[in-house]
Length: 121
Picture 1 (cartoon, one colour):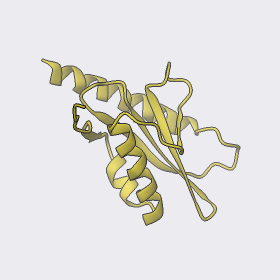
Picture 2 (tube, rainbow, N blue to C red):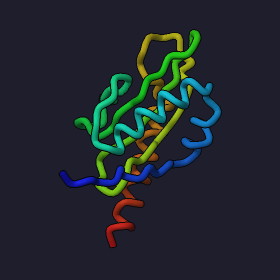
Picture 3 (cartoon, rainbow, N blue to C red):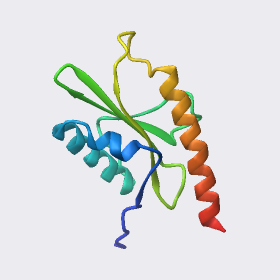
Picture 4 (tube, helix red, strand yellow):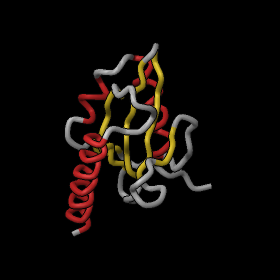
């Protein structure tokens, strides 16, 4: 059996700083989910984020006390996992991701695509 190294994690924008501000239990849950993604494995608290075409953009959902925390990443590129956004969901209007967060995820995904192309040169 061939051992493969986990893919590195690349953090877009303020996503790392934002995730570090989460409660310790949430950071641990998200860290375990990201490590599973690095190794090409599924994790129970991860779901596909709809509206991004396929399974390449995924969302970690962690509950803590009465709060919901989310981290969005992409597995679209073979060289790395790109964490696009980490935030506490504050909307009381259901489970949908707020539009301002979706817009930010699209912008950071475009930036991740640009960085990936540059690394391929």
